[in-house]
Length: 223
Length: 223
Image 1 (cartoon, chains in turn yellow, cyan):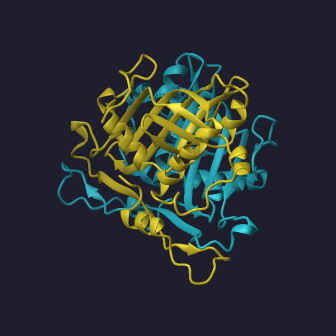
Image 2 (tube, one colour):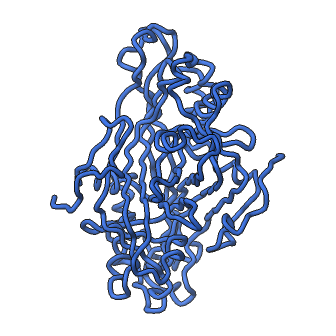
Image 3 (spheres, chains in turn orange, purple):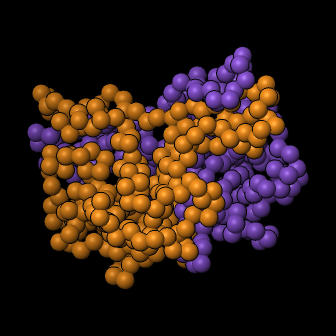
């Protein structure tokens, strides 16, 4: 995979438990693929604000769709500082000692600037966001009107400074604790989909969307 | 429930889709209960950083356990500005129009200052964090030694300024779109636990922890 992701800067280098860190695009984009949403940090009046957001990716651009950052961004073509973090929980890790309790997880942190997507690029950005959750859904749905596009703020964030952190292992108890009469192990955590519920006003005779059907059989998250 | 959560300030008031907002402690604490982790925003060198963290709650205090904020906090008894956000995804919402695609979710945003937990209060803070994921597990595990406590940074964040945002509904298509031949509806999303995996070095004959067993049967997330 070609990518413009550079080496970690002093800012984005993972400082703690650095053996869990990864910086290659395959790993980073794999975690993004598996996550349904991200949490986006911005500054408001000098204070940090963290908001859940839908997102999509195309090449080395992340596209964000949400409210707070969009408000802050209004009119700021120079962009705003953003930190985007996506986390997938894979398991609960139980050690003999309270100290070594942990989680298995995959997370990605992307730091940088986000810019408003210009009118002519909004369609492809929104396609990336809709198709991130359900590949192929964009082509099934009614496309946005010009008025809808005007109302929809989308941010583009070049993925230039990113790191992944992954824990995937059993408990790491101290040797002295191995003999304790305490259960230790991992409980896997997975997302799954329930049965689709038709909209109350769905026209009779319309069957489940092919894209949604494929998505259900691909499992959640798509990892 | 008694609570010190005050009315929303101009900072924490939900601005967009305000009909989805709630500020009562029952709702806010219910969402916290259902979430396994939170995403914490802090400033580093004036830039926002968002990190996934384990957390627990006791009364109107949130306890956070993680790396980055702890590093920033070192020696700062006046605390640091923090935004804590927890999100539970409940469903994917498919509308006839791309514009009205959405998610059902419950999120909580808590803004304020976080302070280092003093040595004598660390045990109860860590108990809140371990028992948040698995009630009762703290009493099963070996308690922390003094050395472990010294190595463990825990933050306390008074829950003074908090808001919840909840979407729980079918697609909200425009009237003009209801006749389109496009499937619309909701696909529920749930977390679930897999079969517990014993640690490789688990002493023969030790059965699954009662607390973990109760947790498995309570379901995930605990909502």
